[in-house]
Length: 356
Image (tube, rainbow, N blue to C red; front, side, top):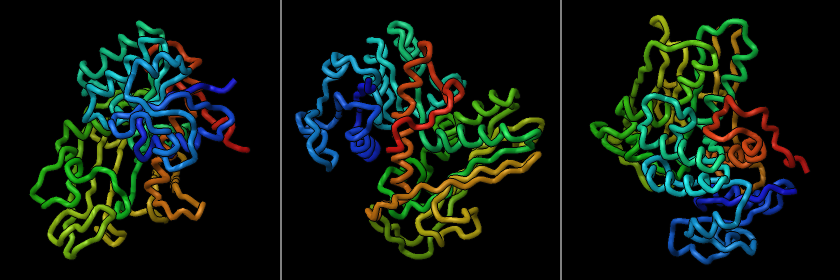
């Protein structure tokens, strides 16, 4: 029997996942939820640029819950829209329907002390009322800085430090980065993520997760933030970043133990591969990297690419991987007890049905 899923969200991630579900031997698309009024009543295939699916999009949570799917796969907006995300997901959880999501990245480790109770308690209560489970994943935060480094740490006898890095060129990326990261803004502008408390809450959840998995208690979590100003105009998929504005940022989130940074998350996001040449880069363009210093020391780079001739950017390939991690987890989340689910609760998720 196929797993019957409802997909909420038809942006970049949701649209690509819907296209993958259509011919998938393990999953069946039974409903699609949208927030844009213009998409209501439109075939999901039309929205996603594929052949009609016979599934019409709706903004009615009640209609989708009534379909009684095996899971809601939620690709809604970011935690900036927390109230709406919680409203939608809680409705499914209270009805006994498991949720796998990429929206609320702090939920990657929901016990992190920086998360507001208003973002945690309603979902925990909904899970309890419905006997359902809620799993949140992503790429970074998510599998690139939880699954990847923790898997490699399991090959070591001693780990002195572990660093997970996102090293990406955002030239062709159309997602939000102006107000969040300050890319494209004047250097005196303070983006949201430059505020240490917000950065740790929004993107630092895997630091305490890794510490918990390793059996240690961190003394503190610190952050760093650097900006690089472009001397020339730079053309992006979203327009032109004028000379004198920020065209690259580098930040870290660091778990400190006994005065040492033992767990670090690092982002270097550029507009153009030549931006901030003094900062770290991968051996290939657009990679996620894990570096472990220990016994043995390990380095791993992961690149996401489309090889179908579509010309889609590596960042978009990473978005698809993000969405598929949530979808492929559905059969395993269905088998878990009710409540919060993290990467530490899941077994190996090999992607059943992917080879065909």
